[in-house]
Amino acid sequence: MIIFSFDFCVGSEDESPVENLGQVLFGERIRPSPYKITFNEPKHCALLCQKQYVYADGKDMKKIRLLQKGMKLNYQHHWILDNMPVTFCFINQQNQNVCTTGFPMGCYVTSDGKPKDACVLDSRYRQPDSYYIFNHVDILIEYRDMSQDPNFLDEHVGGRIIRIKVQPRSIKHEAADKLDCGINAQPFPIRVHEKPDKIIYTYSVVW
Image (cartoon, rainbow, N blue to C red; front, side):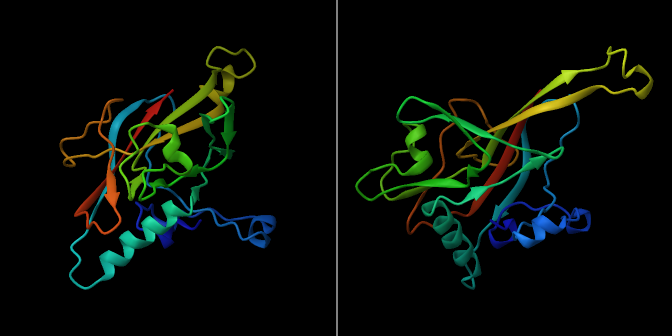
């Protein structure tokens, strides 16, 4: 999925990394993200961006409909952090722990109330004929502390990242200056013909 095809928060195109030949041949394109992550600095409910929609000329409606289409088709984000793939882990309906290298942009509940794809993972995602945009991510970064490692004292290496996990969630933020990313925060359903005036994107980082 190319992030610029959808109305998500974007980073500076000037910082785009150069893909290797294999990535180009397989159609992979790496783009910088707007997330600000500094080693061993946690963040809680940080504002990423706010997308406004006014529907004056039809362009904003197309953006919302494209987001809904992506959620209905279970399109995935694929992230790389420190040259490592970011994984999404969950307990499936067979009670098995599953980890994948992509995570959904959202999910859909059918008109008869049947949750599809990632909507089965949270019992609150149940409003019929609705899309739940995953506008918040909890990022868990596991690392090995190397600050006292005698092999790296001269190089001043603080640590080495060994695993990155992400947990996407749908949150109905009231305003950019009134963010609530608590575990009990209400989800953000978008009805099939609804016209939301804004989508607020947030993130948290735990080391």
